[in-house]
Length: 396
Ligand SMILES: *Cc1c(COP(=O)(O)O)cnc(C)c1O
Image 1 (cartoon, rainbow, N blue to C red):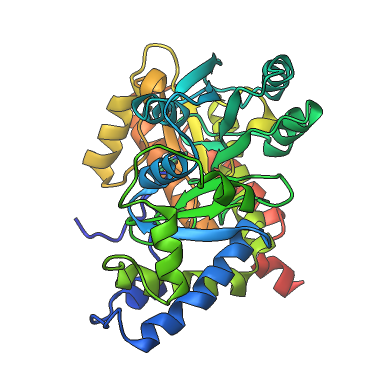
Image 2: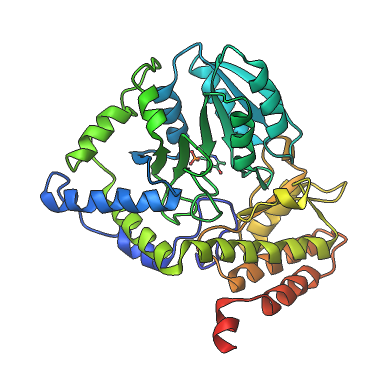
């Protein structure tokens, strides 16, 4: 085990050296003034990542799941009706969380591989004349199936009947890697975490909160203590946390934001598209199929790929790990045994992507998949060398 190989799981992602070093700091006193000075610009810069001017950003020491729980418990009350579609493992887990919080959850069952059904949302909301639905919950990037949903279309569906429900969006595996526009899409709660697009260690839930969501807090009766927005907001305003903050992660976040701004958010999105497109070309060359049902749903951060009939994707991912010490994502939930996933988000280059494609090709060949060695790598190489990369544009 050299520890040199990148991971191709869709989070936690590879941590660039620059961020590992930024997180390797000695304890600083979180009640000292220099800690307070760190916080304000951090929150202001996070707003730029969410693309919100009117909203605010709240973080908690937690993983993304904690961000879901914070969003739900701060804005809703037990018995509140919420509308949510199930089309993968993460939307499924969010439904489970809402049910355990005592919400009245109306679930729209969708085929895995499809995205958020804006048309069905529009129908259900138009029929809800009494405005009983208090929230619509959508997973922007369903990491289990490699599907990106159209959040603007969900917003249009809500606006079509002038429905006042809050719009919750899970953007854990899309923020800081795919286009996300909190204000423009009218998102009230945008849930993310530190270990995906931010390229950091796991341990921070990062939530964008609209003014409307802050107002909903006044009447929300779900129980909360650790995740209380008000406690956190008041403490942040005084330059601190209501409890011990994750200092090393906050230092890492400072550096991560600097890296994202240096590259430029639009360039970050373009790089993710480009790397993902090379992976998709490889999948096509192997003769395999993505779980995403149509090209407009393709995620730029993770590809879920069906194995051919008669093969077990768990055997493939286990073999890649045992033989080559490289991790790929397993098939989750309904996709277990049927599909494997290539995570391509965060700190990744063409060269790294090619190494992953070469590795999974070897693993498939070892297991007698009907895949020609080099076919996927070559398709990706062709795409990477002819599509505009930063290097090529410099040479030209
Ligand atoms: C990773 C992820 C989460 C959060 O998972 P945690 O393990 O709690 O950080 C939530 N939603 C999606 C879509 C994810 O990819």
